[in-house]
Figure (cartoon, rainbow, N blue to C red):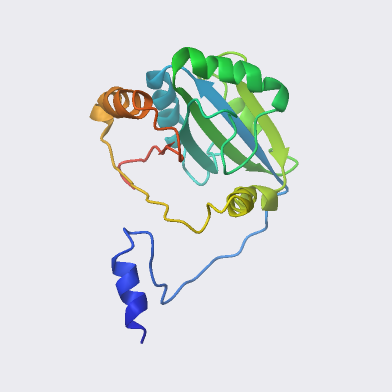
Length: 210
């Protein structure tokens, strides 16, 4: 028994665990991944689209996404973050101009695994969403490349000596009835006004029954 390991788990803010038994069902890897980011200047439209997409989560629902994440884009120079380079370089000026105008831009990231028959499924899923016209960016990547997308960011931070330093992390559950107040009070009232632009701010929708 390793007491230090167990105490480390207890003090890990819920980010560590000890797996004592696991059963992992195997399945064929998808042929590719459709990876899309959508930009919003309106928080209400952003969260409503998140809620709509997360509602399509049945295993047999062909319109269900395989990954859904929201984030904030703020004045940090390049619109690409430390985790991955995504936006086409030619579009950086118009994205930066948008961020400068609004202070905060909300980014919705959606991913759909596909094979030859389902490659265009994600295009149908995105129909009717209320992102800003002209601010949808997508690309097709290999499944392994998507799973390993954080690796390049890790190498970048290591080269700058910023990887092996404390990375405090805070997870909060915000009820639907208070997310608008949280946006105004925290995202805009604290993060934006105090120019706290370092580190990622992620927004995940969750179904209550989960």
